[in-house]
Amino acid sequence: MNKDYETIFKLIKKLAIISLIILAVIFGAYILVSSLISCNEIGCTFEFNEINFFPYTDFSENIIGGLNIAHGYRFGVDFSQPHFPGLYIALGWLYKLLGYSNAIPSEATAVRLIFISAIGVLGLFLIFGKMSFGIRKSAIICMLVLLIFGKYTLFLPMSETLAFWISIPLLYSNLELLEGKKFGINIVDLFLPILIVFFGIGFPGLLIAPYLLYAYLIVYDRRYNIQKKDLIVFFLLVLILINLLIISTDISKIKYWAIDINVVDVKPLLLNNIYRNITEISAINNIYSLLVYLPLPIFLILFLHKVKKISRFVTIIYFLGLLFSMYWRVSEGYKILPVLSIIIALLTYAYSDLNYRKYLIYILYVIVIIYYIWGNSIIFLSKSIGNNYNNGNSVDLSKYNICKIDDNPDAGCHCLQTMVFGPQFYLLNNFKQCKHQINTWSSRMGLSKSYVDIVIDSINNKSASFYIPPIQYYQDDLPLTEIIARIKSIYSCSTLKNNFVFCTP
Image: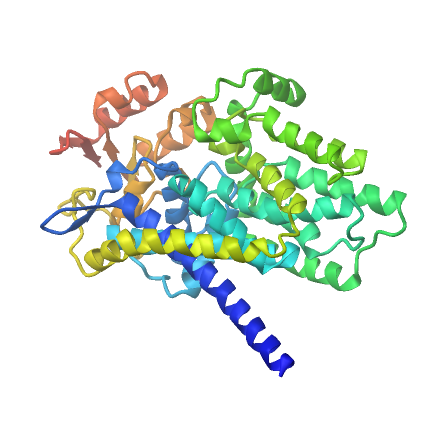
């Protein structure tokens, strides 16, 4: 009889965890929907141009890049961005698997792809979190982040958010290795540094430091080892990533778009750059600067050492070194978000034995989530489904010969190039981007002579139409001012209702 009760209890526990995960996803969806939708007595409208959370332009760039991959476009040829293409590839193949290979950009499509991407981000964390510290802790962390930092929508598809989520199980596993809680270097340890860099090469410390750690442990302590099966799985996963790169990109162009065009933003001396960024940390004026302010993780590391949660000096050195490496490019803001991963990994390790308190936490989460969902999200979702979406964010260029995303290359139409930064333009409107260049302009592009030459070539070849903003958007950008003057001198241009100028050969 006791065994029956035990079986029932385990089943209830599993159902509770599954329910918790579902609630986490629904709560994330609620926050996202309530941020996107404005409702009145007539109906609901998706206010894309009013989004004020996590950089809308940046995650829009990732989603439209993923949609390009899903349509069979190749990075570096059919479209380009000044980033490593791993995140576009991951999203693109996710969209393909879910049947979005022929999806047409629009506001409705954008909403669906945002939800799919958000679930993919959280799902990736739950998979690797389960492998590192179990599904219960993964669910708790997921819930806490969504509850405490939900306003900042850390589930959106950004290299920074993915680095944040994936670093938590990686750093937790590294901590267990350093503290002698485990001696097997497993697939989480081996693969996650590669995956983080695949999504965005802006976190070199999260690639270099773990592999240096594994080499140190294996060389200086014979207790540490790597199982053959983990090595085999690791090489298979890396091989899959390489194949995806080969299929979805022009490999020869990756260095140019991911590194060469970005060097103007990075100071040449790395250590000096870290020192300068740390010493220039500004006052705590937002949630990001509060969370990643340098003394906070340092204090936590030293405190846990003092209370014997962290006992080895090499652990302190490792985490402090990793912490400082995060500041190689910037000192605050969402780009330094993986520092929060260090804090969460340390706290998860320190308070891993929750005992009976875990049930109180489950109950608390369920009460809070049900409160939010019952009060708002179901109403939002029921009102928005089936409504006609406002077209105020879209641009009507139907009378011009502009190619669509799914048009044949020989259709005799023009691709469209926008001369103001805003990748969401291509997420909301069905226009084909121009080959061999970035779909929108940003002031940083003007610092690269090679890129300016690419744009000028497309102007001279009359292979593109151009969507040009009012002068206040570019009057301080000298390279762009000269490019626009060139376009207007040789193209036929007309002013649109929104005061943008459309120029076509």
